[in-house]
Length: 327
Image 1 (cartoon, rainbow, N blue to C red):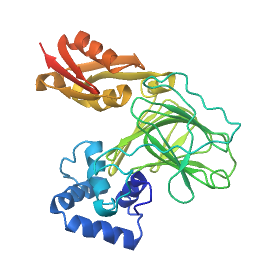
Image 2 (cartoon, rainbow, N blue to C red):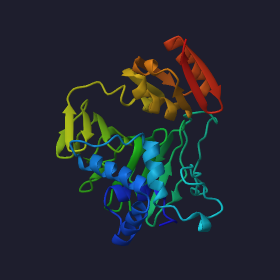
Image 3 (tube, helix red, strand yellow):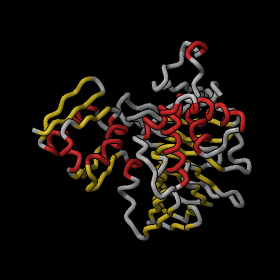
């Protein structure tokens, strides 16, 4: 297990896809760490759709705690491994020698053609960091725009009768039609199944998935969505909202973060991913104020300026950390 991609193991454990031996190892670890065992009980409750589930914290914290269950003990950890809770470096493989690798500028949210690297057997993983987006062409002629801090897992036999991919984060799919071979985007809460269409899937959080359809038809958990429909999925619940503008939901495809009238507390995670920062709000009253933004890619300084103007606030920056104070 230590040599497998940790994010895949996390998702596999939450989805009940680990082998009995692997699951037993995780359960043994959790049994020896009661605090983490309680945390996992909350994750299971959320995934099952229990009526009352405890507060699970943010996604990074969930992943940090889950990752600890899969780590090799420190005495045998590879020298290049980060400590538990740290971020693993992205290890890029290489495309064919004739492939063009596009990286226009080393700036936040720059587009590039991702180089795949092997993760688990028969699987290739494409990953973006915070502040970084990417183009991912697929072998069947389909195309994926991968948003910031996202991961796409593509099976080695993709296009040979198997067109199922796994997404953690957010992506926009332009799907090539293939008779008898539906294209499936698998997330923890929902599978989106299509024959040929263009749609976006947002699955940053284990308890919320959003599918916005631009063209065609998509099936999600038994519901069917058409063009201009938005589907919201929570544990045990799938809601289709008809005839909506999907421009805001798919704003990242044109290089803009679009948020409309949302509380700052709900915008923090998006702002952190988009600008590749850690955002701290020193005054809790600011968290209730509403945010509307349509921002192109930018730097931490750009975010700080926007916060000062929008909230008439004072900001401080230390490296990747931006702190906002009420005046």
